[in-house]
Amino acid sequence: MDRIAVFPGSFDPITRGHESIIRRALPLFSKVIVAIGENGEKRSFFPLEQRLAWLRQIFGNERGVAIMTYAGLTIDLCRRENAQYILRGLRTSADFEFERGIGQMNKLMMPGVETVFLLCAPEYASVSSSIVRDIFRNGGDITQFVPEGIMV
Image (cartoon, rainbow, N blue to C red; front, side):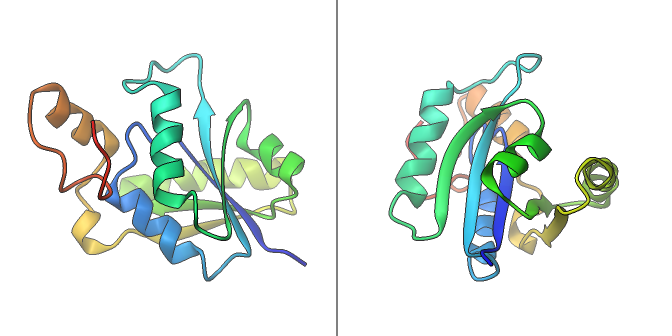
């Protein structure tokens, strides 16, 4: 049986931390679906098309990675894609508390799906998309925080 994981997020922008989680997850799963959630309530900084292009640039030739967008509940995406796992990266204990609640709700809605947490690599613990956006918005250099080759 294939081990399919969904790694949902806004990836606004994708960071080196996201990239690290995905690459470290590849040996654990037969397929990792990197899924950009479209949230009408949340206004993105970078256009969806740009975020998709970045993901395709980084992982387009990577066997075992699928890239897509979705709207609605992540658990419904898991159902549609026959995914048994939701992959989440954790930087802080606050991330754990937040993700634990979501994971438990997902488990109630779809008992066959497990949430798998990977700790971020220590060098990326302080890197978040919101901080990277703020640096970019204020004219700072973000190249050390985003995957190589990402041009913004």
